[in-house]
Length: 144
Image 1 (spheres, rainbow, N blue to C red):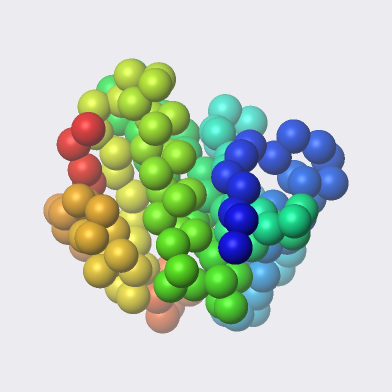
Image 2: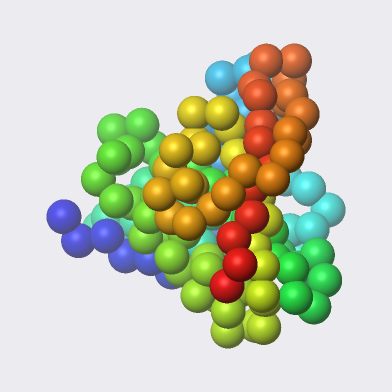
């Protein structure tokens, strides 16, 4: 399986990127379209994983300070999980953070994703609250 990891470049790619983000991260909790976006979209770097042009995974990174980057909105289509797609997206986001001078990456991981991030060197540093009254999150970080 040949997975391409890149930034979405066209309006169509960006639309499909947001659509996947909404479908995986918001729709299951009855959140409306548009809830998958925030006010940092314009200054963030977005990454898609695709197979033959079909977007199957997404992720985003932005900077909180000159040295701290934050990963958000990591999502992979259910049928493409556990085959390394998330790891490829994460690696690209970490590479971008390093290239731009980050020394630490932080993220808020859903409880079921903590094991994935630990496997990649992240540590739980605190409780990040509960989203939609049902999704427990943990604050995690990794020094670069």
